[in-house]
Length: 340
Image 1 (cartoon, rainbow, N blue to C red):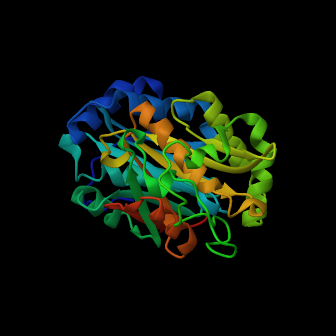
Image 2: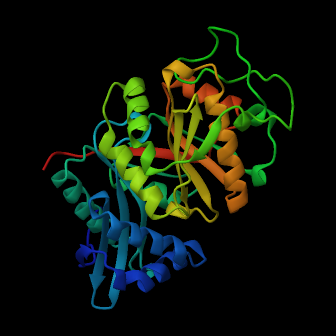
């Protein structure tokens, strides 16, 4: 696909480690700063799990003309069909608006169709007109999702999130009941102290799969196992947690550090999935997980946390808004993929 009437001719191939320096240079020309760590992490992730990443390079006689980074989505917040998320696209400055991005996009859509993906997703700040124009040319539409975010503030105490929770029987949503009410602003007895919150490990797999199946009605073992493997392989990227009561895992939160897609200049954490055992609602599990997440992110120097929530999931939106999240300037986009 190319929206340019006379596109520059390039050869499109898979991105390889040797492309790193040229990718960093193109990205720096776009963003105004070098983000080598972010780019290198994305390339390393693709080498570890090639089946979960699609990364392409456009090449001309002068070298790298552009690149596209995407990853496979399998289960984030209840997804049941595989999809692709575009993380970043960059084109050499002299070749912008010459159809290079369209040729990279065509390679991605063909790859996605061959691998069973049904949709493409991405997100960008509404103030980035250049990115929004490119999404429009590639056929994207606004998705029925909200991005919500919260400042980490170094993990400072937030009474809406960190205070112990006490709910009356029957209050709150079905899968996360504990929002909105607090016992007191007791700084010494935090929400995370009510439950045993730990870093997620591979030993938690069966318990997480069980809770997820009870909530969604689907067995998403492959997705959860992949996220656990990612947490084990690179603890600096994944910051996932489990919550325990009665010597059992009763809740979990899958999150990751996202260091730079589509114009982010500060470290951001993204919550992929939050689940609480239906038998343990009204017990402050969600609050405890969020409280510990913010404490951990503050220690890591992460400045903001965000997540994507379907517009219709009013229960989850209500919980997040009640714990200090607000509307993000980032918009979510989607595009259907035709089968191969």
